[in-house]
Image (cartoon, rainbow, N blue to C red; front, side):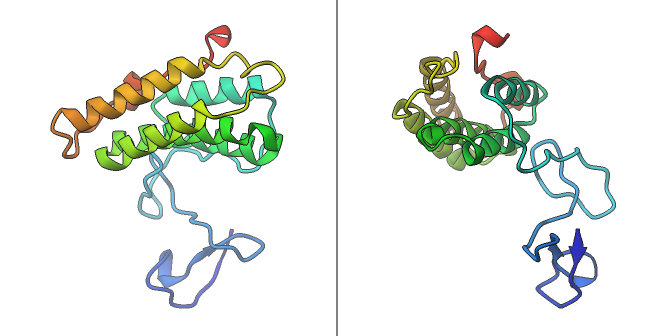
Length: 179
């Protein structure tokens, strides 16, 4: 990553903004398991590489591994790669899964309102998704929709107000055949 040196409101060390080789803004700050930025120099969780093209089974296995490890933010990045590199007809499937992962991320960070909203948005997108050539690759779409709706109700119900959930304990099962 290259860094600019101009003042942009304090992003990065010395006020510079993190940039990639093409000059696009990219945060090089380390992040924790829920994707929250840490101070420069802190030891963070390794990031998921961007733009990785995986097959559906590999995508599901990697995302499930990350969800089980309590890293839904990183699982979202895996799903994001799938929707960007996969067939247009499957975009809603992968975006819906990414939204579920981001919803769980927000819930684990204590943002119950945002978490519930994203869980419901992801569930709605999954319900309207066009299955891939192998159905939905064995993804338990109905189970995920029910899981997302139940978790959204639970985090809003128990007083909401920043109730933090354990991301690993709440991780859904994406695809029973890959278990």
